[in-house]
Length: 189
Length: 435
Image (cartoon, rainbow over all chains, first blue to last red; front, side, top):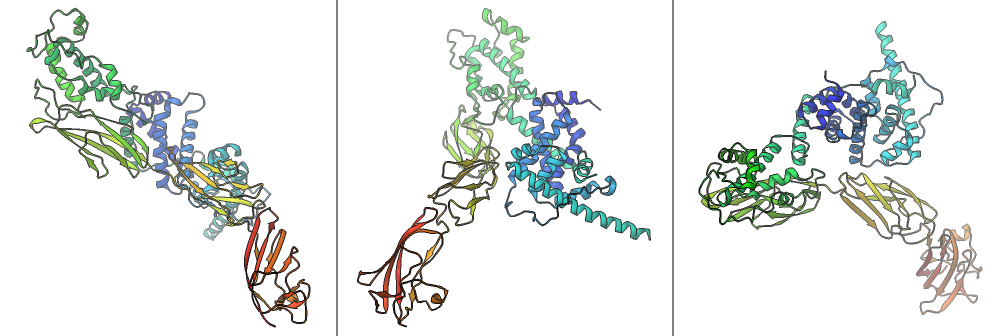
């Protein structure tokens, strides 16, 4: 396996071989990211291709500071956000009702209770805007102020969407975990 | 672990394999994009071919004079592309840089030097050309080499007649465009730089064509259009040259206001954004304030007529805008009058009213919200002022100077102001019905 620096240098010179190696090494990782921001695999693959094109043409901007994977991730997330803005439709009326009980306690989940597929599915049940905010805050680790700038919303909107998204996700996961436990019990009998 | 950690742990580094076809699809797109950009840092066969061709052609011209009429401008479209800055897609013209490279040779006449007939262009002791000669093994070899190299590198412009090497100027095709990409509708000017042709035909890739020399074309819809210029020389030669024009879609600015009739300035106004294909926004609320977020909420500080404008930009910077003039038609405050009433026949009541009197419709008065100034006048059909009130709680009891007025139609006029400062003036008629 060739090391990253050689791949980066080759790509900066637009060498096809280096570009292919970059794809082979990182496409699975980047598709995992794109999938979180898309509603299905096909859309994620679109975002993936756009991301790679951006990467190939801006790789000379990678200064070498910080991790390469981190830089790739950033490009993919930004491409996903551009894609999201392009597809904005009647977003206004999709609001999560206030009556969702926001538990103040910390409910705890075992790590192996859910597969990543199940988590993807649950995430997809959120309205698009909430999903974006939750992804950017909880998984990518951006701050609300940064998220607000990236998405073109208010910082307060980001905060409230995040907490509502979290509450909904928690409720769904609890339901899901109860279902799973019940199946396990049934199977044991 | 809590919800955040759960998602982060499981998804942050989750890996999923893309479909097989994605890889080849991507490489194809990549190849296309790279070719169009002609980044000088990219080392490829075209660059190499073009560079060698330039050197060789330049040498041949210097050494052999007018015989070798391989007009450098034949080469120049390609050369121009290579040398020009890859930069952005905008305003890339194919020729002007080239003219910097081989400026003089075009016009150069070498009348006295008559070694004309030697096809190979042997160099005879011309001191200033010695240096060039060193570049190539011999001019003779160079000539045939250049022929095939020329063929290879001008492949876009001169696909026909590789072997016929006439003494006359060769038919060649090439053109400039005012810009390679833009927002729809996109107007492009085409500049024909071909040589030695009798007629030409342009095909614009969207179904349109032209036989003008330098046409102007408007591309209506977004897309990528391959524009081809075909020139016809003598002996039925046809040469073509193409270029790709990219037309970016325009976004659509669209918005609605909620509530439809807000009370300005008391109510907060919510702006709903239904724009399409837009990534950047600019709202102008009409009171001098602006916003650039997706869906702003705005409160006006005084009552007035406001024109609201939304400007949006697409990913590529194409703009669109929507202006709603006098966006807030009413203030939401109302004053309304009935069209008939039945006065109490037992005598004038002074005009005050209550729910009880309203059930019997005995007093003529309006229903209104938030009125701060008020003046009501009642006129007979002949225009005589019969009643006047500046008090909202005093209506008309149907009497004039103690006498019950005749049944029939009377005119009312009201003027005043709502509490937000919005003025109102209304008039209508009311029928007095006999009890």
